[in-house]
Image 1 (tube, rainbow, N blue to C red):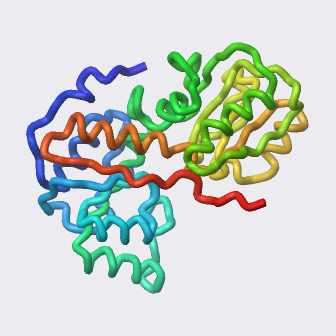
Image 2: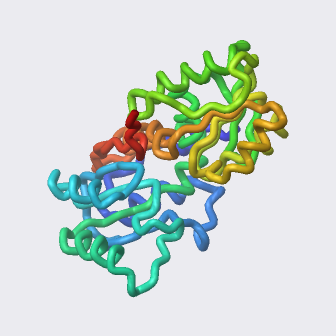
Length: 275
């Protein structure tokens, strides 16, 4: 696994949005600059900034909150306009309204998705594992770096799922979805986030339990197949699984990009659980 030898090196003070984006892109040899979604989504790349808001989803509410805080630069992980590449038709009144608000308030939004999804040791999957208290380095990494396996002492499925739920409760998801024999013993745990949650890939990696999110396993058939073959699955919300990665991104900016102060705006689970 690649190390952070040159990824964490200090850089000279910077104040332009484009330079902050370049700081990340220049350290990611896995990025295709022609295809990546990591770019300035809205706003002026030449804008000088000294503060930024880091948040998972650039929702309208998140943009309103940053304006109230007097911050005009956002670094986010997910799309602004609800499509992965932020493509949208010209005649989209909801998107046009959101963009107008962003521009009227002189806000710049940069997406950091492809970089942070595979940033070694502190990027999205590593942060998720640490949040779940899965210790050590992954026993195996698959799916081009997006799916990891961690080996733990054998424990019953429901006991392990309860531990996952306790971790996730702090960010709004105190209960998780589980399928499989509650008494089955699990010890080879597969984790992933976003669309990188293919259950077959986990099984090929030797996992005996998969933690997926509702974006990567939104189609019922994959989970039903897992249930039919006796492979336990734990499912959480997409936002829950990537919140820890936003915390580490905020920390990274504050520790490695001189002249830019980052503040974290929590998102957590997208859903409130009502019962």
